Image 1 (tube, rainbow, N blue to C red):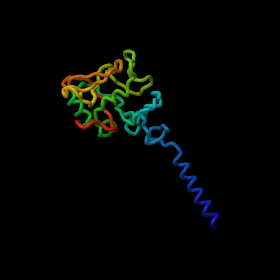
Image 2: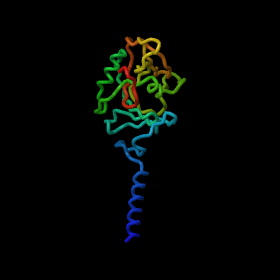
Image 3: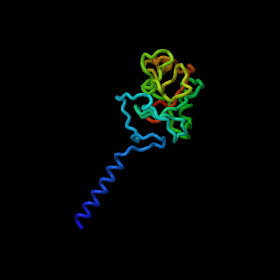
Image 4: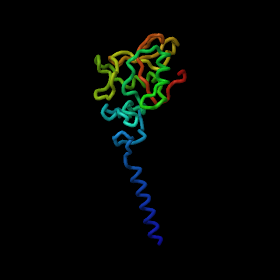
Length: 181
């Protein structure tokens, strides 16, 4: 009797270990650890770094390096900085609310530094309609509250614009964000 109880408990433990060790599928057809364990210190090739999320109508992309979810196709409309904030906060891409403007660090994490013109995004990325131009970040300049940081998606450079200027916006979900949104 005692032996049967030990065997039964052993089988239960083995079953739990097997379930915990198997990769999950995040309703996207890809087997990988879910939820993903982002690490800003890892470097993944684009074909494994970015996962198009089928459970969000294929309108969003998970970045496994950062854990952020990006619009697969950012808006091709231009906004001033305040309008960009409002646009992201009201966005319902993939049937979900909770979008925001990325910080400068989050936005810059997409680009390859010192890229040749037109190659700022990594080869093999799944994004579409990314304009070869500047995109807003939510990060205000420390030395001048009238300005905000931007990333140029022509060559991946980082700069700043006056908040009344009109440029592109790329919204994300997740991460920490910044207070003044």
